Length: 426
Image 1 (cartoon, rainbow, N blue to C red):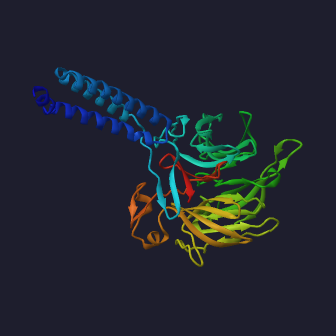
Image 2 (image 1 turned 90 degrees about the vertical axis):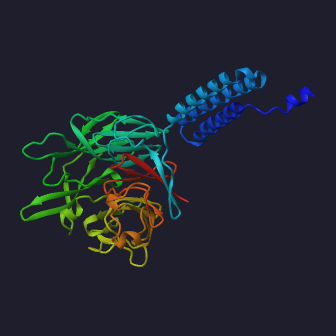
Image 3 (image 1 turned 180 degrees about the vertical axis):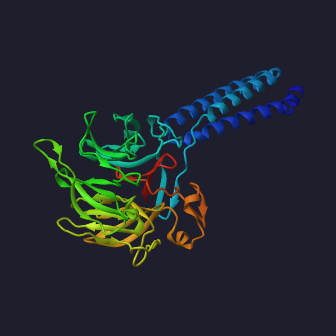
């Protein structure tokens, strides 16, 4: 009877507390295991194993020798504290934000404003802007550095950072071309150069391009077939400013570029084009954005004059239906008969049908209806903020860039928040 009475004896409350504490520590340590970063996986696994082992030891002591309940509880609490400290070291991974049929998530960068190489999750950028992709690499102009994204890691490319700022970066096959700005003002002006980086060596391949009132008098450049380097150039002239299209022709035998050649003048003010972007598609058609007018121009291969490809001059509104319009289009990326456009904090997709734009769709950002309402100032919105039930994936960054990696993922640089995002169409 005595043995039966002992078998129904109540369990010491300390045992229950100890067991619950152990279970909580194990569960809390298991949560970060869902993270997709290697560092988080290691830390969370360590926290989980510590909690699990100590839990087992405590359970053994508790049920074998009741006198050691206090000791077991202390051990378990110490293990819980240690696993908790490890779990706190886990790097928070920004959650994916969804807009319509598109998911936006962080591709690279920790959000810290610094130059730090490493894995995509641990690296840091200062102001990642212009991007260009070649084979399995993505190059980024990051203030006075050129960063290379390859095989899940970020490294810093050779570049004379002590002398120049890297404004733009493009590639011609394996060679990198950088629009650079000298660091020191001379005669009250800065100067631009085109630099080629080949086999780790940097070489100036153009004459000095004077910069006037604009922060950079070359908003963008691009390569056509034959390695011809085309660029937009802005000039200060008496009574105003002008915008021109120029090029550097490549001498294959001499392996060098000739002096700048004038091609044509744009019929728009230089102020409207100070943040213009340009790009050639696979058929050698040239597209140029004119942000100040809210339009995209097209110069067909072999044609002599630009035509308005998309948008209505001077009508700065978002519209995806009918005669679709743009607010402030900058970065352009042509892909298989489609043209991605960075338009004042949104990413939009234009369907190309021959010489015209046939359709437009907003992929990421705030919906055109909200933007046109005038009730939202996108310049002051925070990443992840919800507006009328729609999550705002990123801040407006007209100086951002678009690129496509070797796996077909659309990338968007965010120089203001030091991130590079990936945009996946579901």
